[in-house]
Length: 311
Image 1 (cartoon, rainbow, N blue to C red):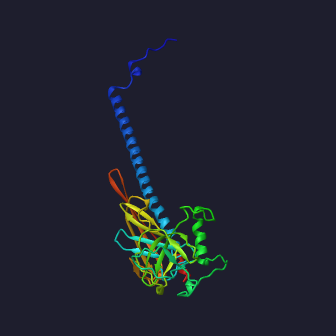
Image 2 (cartoon, rainbow, N blue to C red):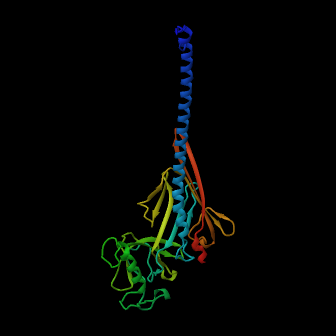
Image 3 (cartoon, one colour):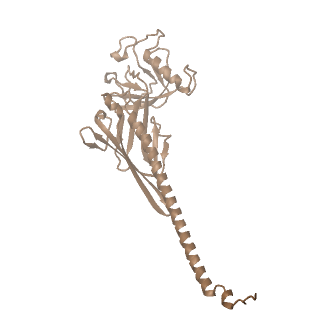
C-alpha cells in the first residue's frame, strides 16, 4: 500500500500571532492569579492584626473584670473599695479588697509629720475603745489580732514559721474613716510588748490618725489601673515606682459607674456610697498600624462588684 505524502497544511504549527496571543492570555491569567493571591494575603494579615488587637483588649478586660468582681471583699461600708478618677479618655480605676478577716485598730494617736514606727494596736490597761481591748486567748502575752497578722506575715515566704528573712514583710494600709484618708506602710515585725506592730518604711506620716476617729489598719490588695504612655498599667498596693504594663497600643481607658437608682457617675471618690453601685462600665480603645493605615478597635464591658450583695 502506498503512503500518501503529508501536505504542508497538516504539518503546520502555531503561527507567531497565535503564539503571542496565547502568551498574552497566559500572562493575564497569571497576573490575575497573583493579584488575587496578594489580595488574599493582605486580607489575612489584616484579619490577623485585627484579631491580635481584639485579643489584646480582651485580655486586659478579663483582668479588670476579675478584679472588679472581687472588690470590696471583707470591706466595711465606710471604706470605699472602688474609686474612679475621671480624666476624660484616660481614667484611673482603683479596686481594693481585704486579705484578712482581722483588722487592727490604732490605739494611740499618730500625728502627721511624725516618724513613729511602733504602732499601738491594743491596750492591756484602759483601752480607749472596745476594739483596743487586749485579748490573749493562747496566753502567749501577745494580742490575738497581732498573732493572726504575724502568722500571715510569716507565711509570705511559703513557710508557716517565721524565718526572719526579707520576704516576711507586708504592705499594710492605715485608714481613718472620719477623714477618709489613708496611707501605705511596710509592716515587718512585732515588738515584745505584745500590743505593737513595727512600721519599717522611713517616710514620715502623711496624715493624723486620732484614736477618737477609730482608725484601722488593713492587709489590703489594691489594684490601680491607669493609662500611661500608650500602656494600660497596673499598680499593685501603691507601688507607683514599679508599675506593670498589662497591654500596649491603648489610646483610651474610660470607667463610669451605673448606680442602683439608674444614674451614672463618671467619678467615685472615697466618700461616695460604693454599696449603691449597680455595675461598672469599662471601655478600652486600642490602635495599631497595618500597611501605613491605622486600625482601631473599642471594647466595652459591664461588671458588678459582687460583694455589694453582702450589704
